[in-house]
Length: 269
Image 1 (cartoon, rainbow, N blue to C red):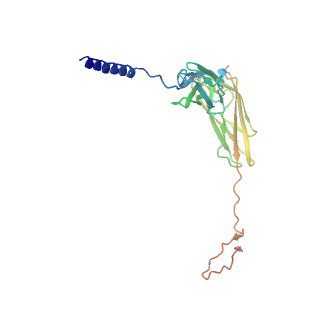
Image 2: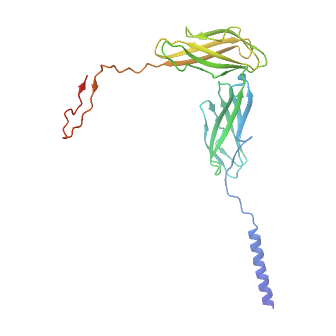
Image 3: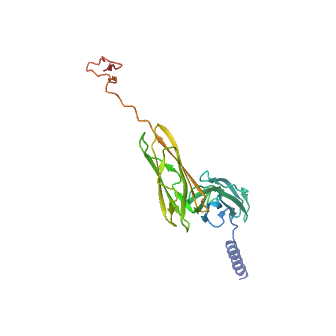
């Protein structure tokens, strides 16, 4: 009886030890985890030209339990720079990404930065950058493009001026280059608040090759004292025409007996 009791007690002890072992929390595997402060999109909102270039310091956190090693930080275009103050980030720590975007265009812009790291679940993290540049007088497009262009024929380029302010804007001192170029934009033209003005520049090229154009004007708005828009076009030379009396190389005839009376081809007129 005593032996039976001891056997039962031993079995119970074994099961008790096994249950405790099963309930023991295993330590988490070592891994880094990248996280961008504020989310994967940074938005400056509406920005006036005097606030350009766009700048921001964005924190990159390591939410894992192992060192986060940052590899390449690659902006999506040459107008964006993003140096990082350090490449190794300890668990719970962060690094600072110093973002600068140089932009000249108006309206909404979208850029990106790809951050490569040793995060096993997110080796290539993409940070989106957004803003809306709100000039008092915006231009769409930024440049004047002349297409199509033929020699001694008038070519035209167009752009739209938009008044984003809450007051009327008066155009002053309109100048257009080169000599012979004309525009429908006139001195003392008025653009009402919220209105669009379609500008047309015309020019008749007199020689082949590329040419440039420039449209300058001033306004009475304090935020837009002057505007300069550049443009270009190309007059291509036409392909030479084949004259009717030009010599033509006749193809070598194929004869039934295998001989070739004109192996090199002959000139026929």
